[in-house]
Amino acid sequence: MSKQSLKDKSRDKWNFSTHGQGGGMMKNMMLDAQVTPNGLKDRMLLLSALDIILSPEDWLRTYRMQSEWSGDVCLGEVNNGAGDTIHMLWTRGGMLLKGFDHESPVSPHARDEYEVWPGMYDGVPDDMMELLEDEALEKEDVTFCMWREAGDEEWRMGNANFPEGYDDGSSFLLGKIIVTPEEYQDWAESYYELPISLGVVNQIFNGVPITAQMISALHPQRNVTEAIKELKQLGVQVHES
Image 1 (tube, one colour):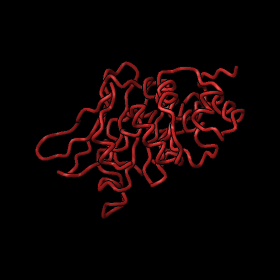
Image 2 (spheres, helix red, strand yellow):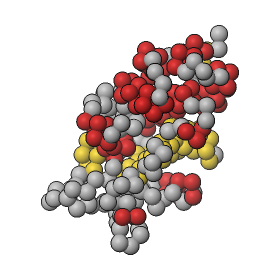
Image 3 (cartoon, rainbow, N blue to C red):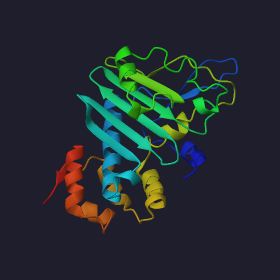
Image 4 (cartoon, rainbow, N blue to C red):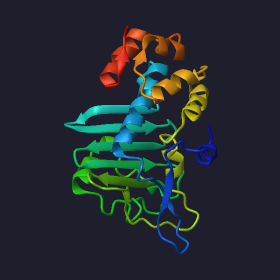
């Protein structure tokens, strides 16, 4: 699915808002206040569950969650396999989301001197910045970043200002999470080259506990026992009977 098609489609009840300054500066795309850290966590869990069902091989999956990545910190990752990523960290103090579009002119790799765009991490809480020092999170691979501390009513960003026309990739990449069941089905059929049951996808999006029958309906060749084991480790509801 192209970047443009992801940008153009509706986003169900979750939407984007703009954040930035005038005077010709490109406005970043930002999550609306109604998209909460817990809501994002639930969404990532169900997307990761679908990937577990559709792909026995972890390295082919786009969505991943580690509930105990570092102590009580939960890590979520979106990786499209083409160099674009989102890393999400849920902590006791809130949530941080860091995205990287490798084609964006905001990328450190696109600059004359390799460095993170000035202001990108301005204001990020110290405890979250410390977590970003982990090599697995690729701190310098960033084209947008937003966070929300406990008690915040909206998302926050740093003070990165971009020239007019610069795209930080946030609309494209956030569209990997803010996706309707129909959009997910469309993407999954293309990516996995399988017919995907929209009815089962709708059930999982609506929080229906996953059953062996639902797994087989999505992927008839999937080893159900192995899938259920991974789904339990992920922490989603499973009914084995």
